[in-house]
Structures are given as C-alpha cells and as structure tokens.
Length: 88
Image 1 (cartoon, rainbow, N blue to C red):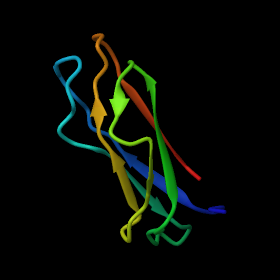
Image 2: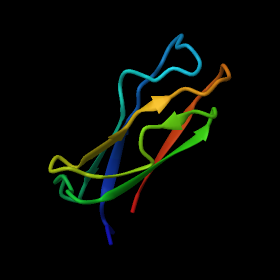
Image 3: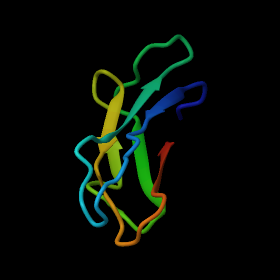
Image 4: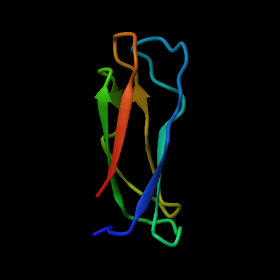
C-alpha cells in the first residue's frame, strides 16, 4: 500500500538515564513518499527490540507532517535499549 514510500527515524540518545524511567523526548518517525512529500495516514508500528523497556504506544498514524511518535520507558536492567519502527 505504501510502495515507494520511505521513512526517517529520529532517535533519542540517552546517556546516564535511570533504569525504569521514561525518556523526556519521543522517538519520532517521519514518512515521506518518493518525491519527499509527507505521507499522512500511514500506520507506524513501534516495538522494543531489546532492553526490556516499554512504549507509550505500539502503533500510531502519521499526521499531516508525516510524523508519528512514541515514548520509551527504560527497562529495569542497565544496558542498551533498542526501539524499531515499521511502516505498513
């Protein structure tokens, strides 16, 4: 359905965060078509790939700017936390 679409993923790089706390800034995805135009209405699925954290939402729809976001609450163990985003 979104063939020829691309997306960018802006990630927060957290330093010395306390385990189990929510990050102040969201993970933000911008979906654009092959002409660089924002795509409204695309579904973005977010998932925690590693680190055991949790997300404020696991799925979102892009707005008129082509953006969708989610917030990460860090897992209970020190180490890397990884979030993925998939556009469908």
